[in-house]
Each structure stands twice: as C-alpha cells, then as structure tokens.
Length: 154
Image (tube, rainbow, N blue to C red; front, top):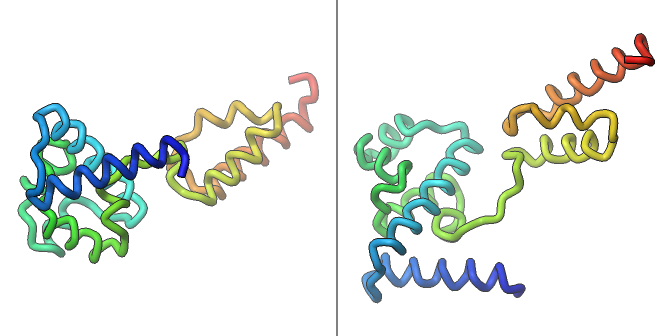
C-alpha cells in the first residue's frame, strides 16, 4: 500500500469510527468529510444517471436531506450510507473515502481522450466536456482530421 492509499484508508477508517459513534471529529474534519461524501455522491449519481429527486423518491429520503449531503452541509448516518451502497451497488469506501479520480467520468471517454492526447495535432479537443461520450470525441477528432486533409496549411 503506497502512502496516498494509506492516507485514504486511514481517513476512511476514521470516518467509519466517527459514524459508528466511537470517536469525535472536529468541525473542520467534519466539514472536510462532508465535502468528500458530496463529491463521491455526485460522481456515483452521475455514473448511475440519477438525480437528487430520484434518490428522494426511490429511497424515501427527504429532498432537503439529500441536498444537504450533496452540498457537504450534513453527512449521512451509517444506515443511510448502507442504503446508498445497496441502491448503487457500491461499497462504503466508494462513498466515504477520498478517491483520486481521473478527469473523465467515463472509462471509455478517458481511453478516447488519451488517444487524442497522444496525437499532438489533436490536443485542441481537450476543451471538450469531461462527460462527453467517446463517440462524440471520435466524431470531433475525425472532423478535425478531415479539415486538416482539405486544408493542409490550416
């Protein structure tokens, strides 16, 4: 386990112990933890194509509660984290621990972006949105290639 993964594991363990009532956390630690959960929930919801309204309706959790989680104002109790894990098919660590995620939200988009990045003439495409579909990036790359072929000096 490298140092970064150790720190993530250590923080996750501390958060778990806090949520289970074993230890206390400072306000600053709790605020930082709320930001971690909010970021992870946004990522998980985006991948699952779910909205706050979907969670509220399908899990029976109040909209204001979910909004507070999503904004890092409050943190979910352990029973709610377990409910979210069951709903999304993820682990506690997916919700509770910091993750060093890449820029792109979809693996197939990240792969296409890497191919474009390695082509020095195509790097302009990195202005594309990070949640673009790989086929959209491919289409843009093909378009630029065709433009270069018709105007080699451009």
